[in-house]
Length: 257
Ligand SMILES: Nc1ncnc2c1ncn2[C@@H]1O[C@H](COP(=O)(O)OP(=O)(O)OP(=O)(O)O)[C@@H](O)[C@H]1O
Image 1 (cartoon, rainbow, N blue to C red):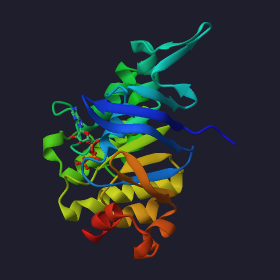
Image 2 (image 1 turned 30 degrees about the vertical axis):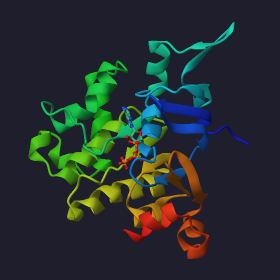
Image 3 (image 1 turned 90 degrees about the horizontal axis):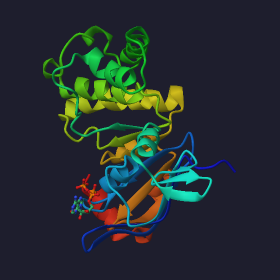
Image 4 (image 1 turned 90 degrees about the vertical axis):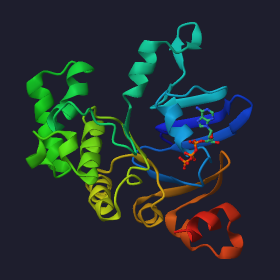
């Protein structure tokens, strides 16, 4: 069997005395689309933040693309990761944020070319060719020279997706990417993700409150409660199981939709 692209092995994560994850195991295979659903405070964002190395862990290990995230392999065995290793590992992952996090002083195109030029050392011509392709993919070609404050929320988020893809990540992490949008703008963003899933078979890990979207797009849905996966399976199995077999946490979240 192929190696998972992401693998959490017996992870422990605490904030002070508060335990978020204890003996937590989770994986995502290449080409898989996995949605994480769960109540507020259940640890969804923390999971993504650990992957982006924005949060450390207190125990266990995380592998990304077959390599330990927090350690580095040396001839003498595993040693704690240094900055260079973390930097390299981070580039396997592209993150799209709830609040877009675009650079306000840069044009749409420059937002997309910045990291490939600065981090990957691509030439302006190369980076702009990538940006042109991605702007077309997200339907923003005609807005290339505009600035973020001239865009709607949906357009900003489409640029956010293009920017994450510009570094050619192995997996896209999506953290409630439609939560800050007016309802009428949600679909244009979800359409971009649908397209990436269907036409490009992209590996994605989504934290979402959009139950109908998770059901439509995912290969697997994981329902989180208090730092643990309490229900997991193919969407049809997860969303159609009889009420008597559901956890209370799932019912609370699902019924509130
Ligand atoms: N930096 C921090 N310091 C202390 N506690 C934190 C920190 N970040 C998160 N937590 C706590 O960890 C728990 C999990 O938070 P997390 O943001 O992962 O939840 P979530 O499932 O993403 O919630 P939401 O749906 O509201 O975004 C919460 O109880 C939160 O208060």
